[in-house]
Length: 218
Image: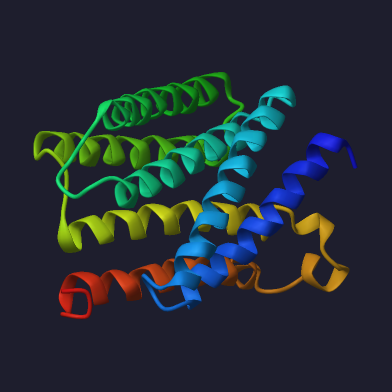
């Protein structure tokens, strides 16, 4: 395994363990904060290295996934690190980054369909474009409101961090299915390979429900 790939895999493995610990731990307590910090650092390293490796290998889908993960992780971290109801130039840059990413992904989808090289009709690029566009609009909303507070602040931190975690988990299984033992490579039905990634989304929805619709974090 090449040193760059080995570094990427090691950082990703650390991030997956720390992310699981942060999800399981009592929210707001020392374990959650410590695991979250490790997760942020490890996932940021993993995502940036993924973008570099993907660009070197001309794998645009992986490059966009890595860039989107970087965006999710960074904006989630900024949300809880700065005071409530405050915005800065980082928020404006994040909004522009998401908007440009959406436009780039849409163009790549259109171009791949036009050239007849599109995977699944360009669906992966279209999905990335739609998600990035939604995030840019939400960032604009936060900027115009001069920040978020209370439940909205926790929810913004939660769903962005979890989506970054979701992309990381999905990139391992089924993303790297060929490196797993043969029984996992030939598992049927194929949807079973998505259970780990979908579990992250299920946990995210559970915590969003608690944050937004109960008084658990009032």
